[in-house]
Length: 329
Image 1: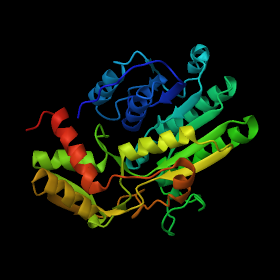
Image 2: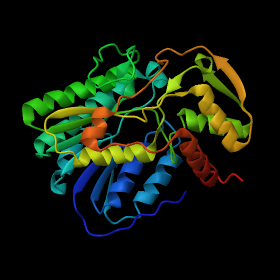
Image 3: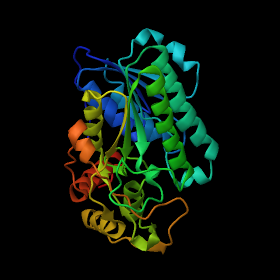
Image 4: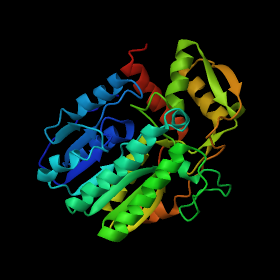
């Protein structure tokens, strides 16, 4: 799936962090096509294949409305560099992702997710940026048992450091919104997948290993349920947050609101590829939750959020991109 950007005159100046990341790339692309000026920030770290990040970035760099800054978002020296840009909106999508990786490298999560959020909020405060949108995660619901997960539920029982770091970003936004009048919107993403996706995510891992004839690890014996959400729907949700006129600090779920059993998800991948997977069934891993399920009633109301893509539609789109990108017949 080839992406091309159409350029015209500027509208808003939007700072988007994590610009070379999966969601960041698609968000930048969409906003460039809406004629906005984008300042993209990314540290291009090696958590996963740097070539994939650079390939995304190459597409964005085709637009004259895109400016790229390579930096960690927690670097305080970044703030004065952005003074001349007159930023209208900050969309903080940069983060150290991954539940399981947080067990191995906790410090990166504190630096990127918590200190990074703090630094971006300081940027908003210093230059009087009135709208601040940031990525949270369905992981914050942790050990919650009541389904579907609602933004009205308490989220003070995280089961991973990643979840704890994301909950911390919400608390920081609440504080800055209250103290400095910044309109903050937190978006809790639910298992995002699609073209240009992350290699550490299930859709990518399963597709790659099945094509290579390798065994796939299936945790909780395939009985996990995930509210898989297609990237185009997430981008529409972010657009809804940009247009949202609500003031103060608000949090929304962006999920498909239709949990899929992992075994069924894998079957769709197998059927799309025309290859039967070799399977290695394993118990649930530390930090994982058995099920995610988004209540999106508030998102529908305030953000006009209406996810359109089912997994049976989205998985073939991902696999089509994967085969094109890696030149697989």
